[in-house]
Amino acid sequence: MKKRTVLYLFMLSLTIIACEKPAGEGGTSTIRGKVFIRDYNSNFTQLQAAYYAQEERVYIIYGDHIFYDDDIRTSYDGTYEFSYLRPGNYTVFAYSEDSTFTVSGGQYAVFENIEITENNQLVEVPTMILLK
Image (cartoon, rainbow, N blue to C red; front, side, top):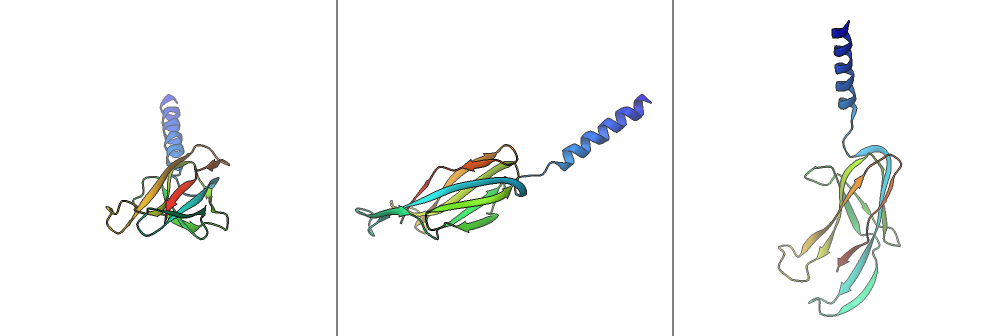
């Protein structure tokens, strides 16, 4: 009887561990933030305008994935939102112009690391500031 009980508890613990789902879609939590643009002249010596980004692409990476898993565009007021996420670690990023002229391709990613710790959680990301 003891062997059967131990075996049952072992199988139950394996089932619980196997049911844990990694970061990604299928949950009830949300990541929300804003993107702000600082628009400079071509050599980045004079600020021409500053505003919340419209239609700026924002990307999200689930857990430790290498490539982005989803992307969205900001709304008229610079907000973006990734919904229906499970607890886990996420990376949100957008591309900014390189004002130092040292980055190949002229752009670099501005990253924010986020952790969702529970269901039905709303995580507010600090405003990302991009140069254009």
